[in-house]
Length: 174
Image 1 (cartoon, rainbow, N blue to C red):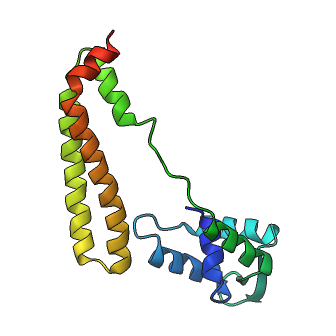
Image 2 (cartoon, one colour):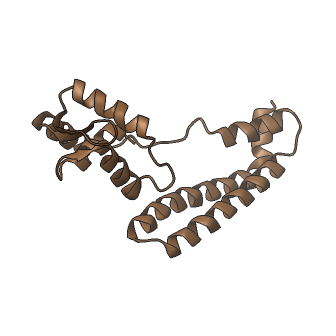
């Protein structure tokens, strides 16, 4: 995820302080990975330097001065370009799991144990995500669906690989 673009997008609704941006980010996108304040302020500093945001005001109070940031026209254009650019599909052609299976075969270990252990771990994670989805709001349901669909694809691969393990062993140990 591009944190800079996400913060810029959040600024399109109006100027905000770094604290408000962090809170909005965490509420909408950071359920599993909240932003650190340092990350917000270093990102805002970079966006300011690049002319994508400007300081809309500075408030002094009991603590340090609080800058209020606003998105610039260049920032709006940058967000629009980012939103219109498709994400690169992740084909997982260098899968760690595949590597483990092949290495197990090459070292005469039981690759089916690796597949079984991984299947159990995937199913455990799917139960957790299904429970979270059931209890969550629409945003949580959608993000859980995304993760569940990926895990389902992994499970299909695990089953296919288990069914072809003999042929794979022959192919990699020649």
